[in-house]
Amino acid sequence: MERTSAYFDLIISVRAAKFESIQLTSKKTAFLDTLLSMMHEEQLTMDDIQEEVDTFMFEGHDTTTGGLKFAMFLIALHPNVQQKLHDEMDTIFRK
Image 1: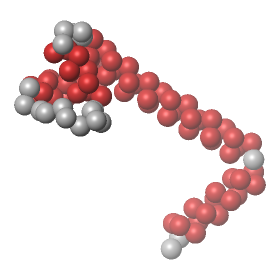
Image 2: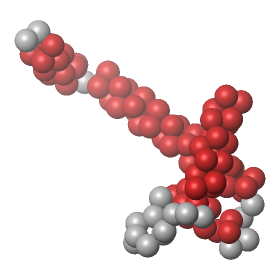
Image 3: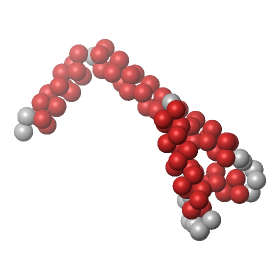
Image 4: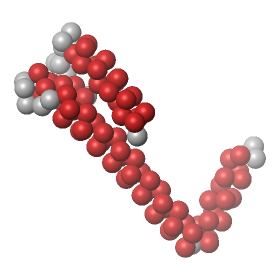
């Protein structure tokens, strides 16, 4: 977790350093840019931003993992689906 957090710190720091020169004119703004904008309006601190980024990165990972585990569980319950998946992979990878 320390290495990951340090990596996120680096990304945030680099983006924050460039933030002043970025024109936020698009209707669609990156999540980090929105957080940095709030920091410049003194609504968030750098620690707040780090916490938000950590939450989104790790929770997204947990959600994906949970979805994959549930899909594997359902596939395991249905041998006919397993066979169809196996046949499809055979046709793809044996070309």
